[in-house]
Length: 116
Image 1 (cartoon, rainbow, N blue to C red):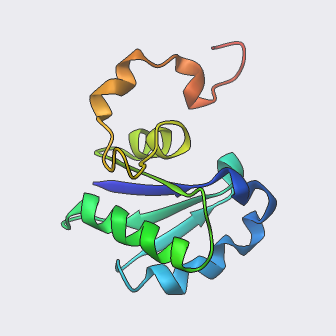
Image 2: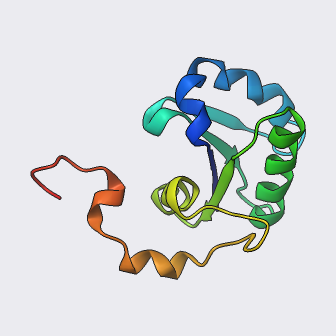
């Protein structure tokens, strides 16, 4: 399973996302940051309880003072990324249903405008 963290606030602090890695390494063995979509943080959950890892990662980043962070859990990276950036976890619905992605328009994948 893949876990992706995203926040709209990171669009202004994307260069400091790598600073999250040491804190997140307390809940998972591997962390990777990307600049796409304003900043993505990938938390490795392979062979682990992905929902628990996602909740723990959210607690860590919120403990660092970062708010409005969402997590997505999926069997593929793109599903986790879409859930995190558009349908992410919230206290009311901690683990969104990946099957609900079927109703989304292809534009959530951010393809070339000619393809969307």
